Amino acid sequence: VTPASGPSGRTGRPSRTSRAEILAAARALIERDGWEKLTIRRLAADLGVGATTLYHHVRDKQDLQLLLLDSYLEQSPRPELPPEPRERIITASTAMHDSLAAWPWVVEVISAEGFIAMLSADSMWSVEAILAAAVDLGCTPVQAVHVFRTIWHYTVGEILVRARSARRAGDQPPDFSAGVDATKLPTLAGLFDRWQDLAGRDSYADGLTALVDGLLINVG
Amino acid sequence: VTPASGPSGRTGRPSRTSRAEILAAARALIERDGWEKLTIRRLAADLGVGATTLYHHVRDKQDLQLLLLDSYLEQSPRPELPPEPRERIITASTAMHDSLAAWPWVVEVISAEGFIAMLSADSMWSVEAILAAAVDLGCTPVQAVHVFRTIWHYTVGEILVRARSARRAGDQPPDFSAGVDATKLPTLAGLFDRWQDLAGRDSYADGLTALVDGLLINVG
DNA sequence: ACCTGAACACCGTTCAAGT
DNA sequence: ACCTGAACACCGTTCAAGT
Image (cartoon, rainbow over all chains, first blue to last red; front, side, top):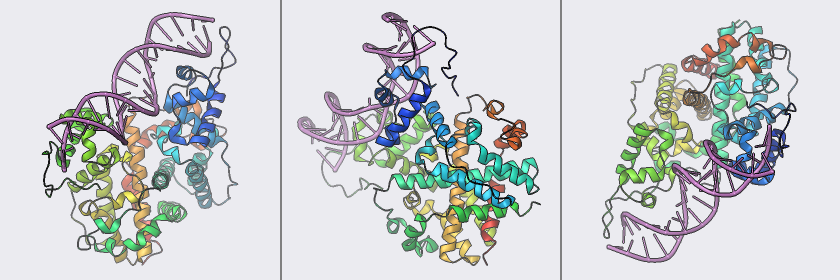
């Protein structure tokens, strides 16, 4: 994403920080103080360098965040893939989801379709697995991309909603009863005492299965 | 979301601003300078009041954003709903999607499952329509909520990805060829010259149809 | 090459005081 | 009731200068 300060550097002042050190310090900072406390200034302070020094190693804050996510994804567990293509899509998607969901702040980083293209090859195995399985099921390349993108959108959305729910847990539970007018919203009104409980459940797997089945109806 | 400075106010200094004025000014500011320029300080400057004055009318910045989204959603077009329940789900979901997609900055506001509960009744007609249609199709209440949540996650994800793609349009197109290793990622490598084009397409409707069909396979 | 402090141009929010 | 300025505690980023 940014040219690394490689070992080919020839002369001049020896560097006091490297990209690897920066990423390690960033991980430690997040671990210690939380994601929202990751700022260029704090990170530089942790490293014992001036804030502006970091701009020699990363392009900007977003670049830093992307590097961080990529290095995390690279070391995420990678499950054995089952032989059956449909199962392979489910397994790869779930692994992709679980890796991302484990880092709730991922939402601030997942930007653009281009986001995927910025990851390193080791982080993209799940993309490859889903595309390959779709092709095995008889999808054309165009259809396979559609399958992947639809799963990707669903996955990103689930993680966004999940992450925000978790973050504002300290808030009062949403007072549904206040806003819901039984005349205008009868079904919702009849449901709102159970909504709280249902909305908290992890339904990613169920939704994914339905989505994959729906996507494969007209294929193969 | 915050108690309004209602007409029941009795004595004291007459107010120079109201919530309605604040929201109107915020809309104008966004129109003029863009969403990212909406700050408490700028908004107050536009209104000709001190920045701190706004805290008498909204709880905080997030509250302001939520109020803004709600007032926008209230006035969004509301399509005629078809009689057939499956079509009704598609129509209501698409309307919900299109309303949200028209305001790309919606992503910063959609927080938590609780987000939905914070909207006013007029903004929630699509939620009601989807739930009611699912029940009409034979879903139990629990299943209907699952149908809605799954569609919601898909919709939110599509909008997140869409919004971020649009925002960073000035950036270089993601240079796929650099990162993609044909040995590790053969399917992806064989696709990357077409990926750019495919990723730009609007596939919300296709994905939604697949999702709804998948969700309804085991129902009714 | 690499690192630095100073500076620029901002933020959201609190609080004691004024009218 | 409503509004205020001052202050607190920060941000990301640029730039000219130093080693």
